[in-house]
Image 1 (cartoon, helix red, strand yellow):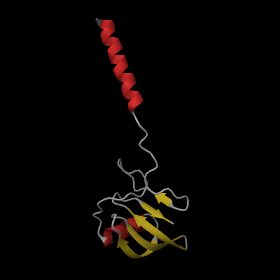
Image 2 (image 1 turned 60 degrees about the vertical axis):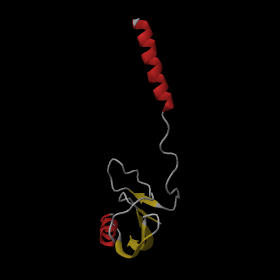
Image 3 (image 1 turned 90 degrees about the horizontal axis):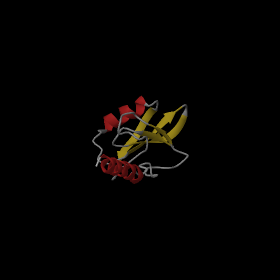
Image 4 (image 1 turned 180 degrees about the vertical axis):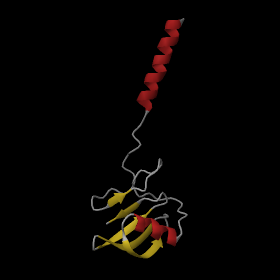
Length: 107
C-alpha cells in the first residue's frame, strides 16, 4: 500500500512540474529602443502593460520624475491606461510612458 501511495505521489509531483508554463511569453512592449525602469514590487515585471490606471496626472508626473526624468510635459493617458508624455534625461529629449503598475519607460 505504501508503495502505491509513493508512486501516486511521485506521479502527481512530476505532472505538476511538467504542467508549468513560462509566464514571460513576450507580452508587453519589446523594443530595444525603449529602456524600462521598473518601480519595484512583487507584481511589477518591468514591462509597460495596459490596465486600469488610477494615477492622476500629478502622480504620474511625480513617478516619472522619481525615475530621473526632468521637465515632464504633455502628459496624457491613452485608452489602454498608459500615460504618455515628453521629458528630458541626461540632456536629451525623450518620450516617456507610465503604466498602471508604476513602471516607467522611455524612448
